[in-house]
Length: 300
Image 1 (cartoon, rainbow, N blue to C red):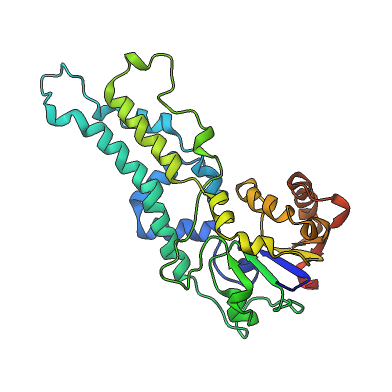
Image 2: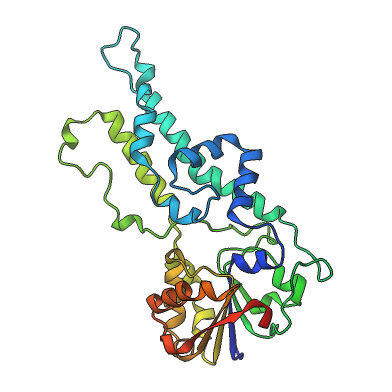
């Protein structure tokens, strides 16, 4: 792979071009297409009004609220209307919520991404004047905006989380809290005393955290050839990526390559006010602060 420039592409890239790909747009889509999934997100994920940081919120699903809200399905064994058929009612309802927050959410997300309208050069809200289409691209986006608007060959792009134009690609969405480091809900001092139905529900919820985990290490290993080939990078340009912790593992993999670590890093910002936070995140990722600088979108 011979190119001196690596572009790191995030969702802000699509939004800058006028594509309605923001969290609030996804919220509107879910609200209008799947009220059950929408309800569970609103009830159990710690989201702001615009659904920013959705992936991070997946790791903080409110298990206590879920157990409390569905507790009425766990009837007393001594109730007059008790029957053995009711033994699994509580676990069944917990499973339904968990599936809507995992499989259901991912299905709605993939549908939405694949329906996003990608403008042409004549209708795009903005266009970059100097994008090097022969560079190397690590895209955290799912859309083919780079190819449609700038003629970038898909051979130059690694869609690390899947490509919407490939029907068989699984679009990756998830949190970064490894379930192996998470304490099981059944890891408690009074486990021998709790209702077996609650134990089973806890296992279901534990499974949710595992199912919604973004397995970045596996994706990096799968695409090891791409990362190992980054031997001649002199400049890294970050376009529209938040540099959030949920993708930190990918940046760590990039920085394992000496040329990438020694490169000059530029981060596109809409205004100078964005830069201090971006700069701090670069430092936290391990980038030499002297090698990092702000660049305005309109200058690219």
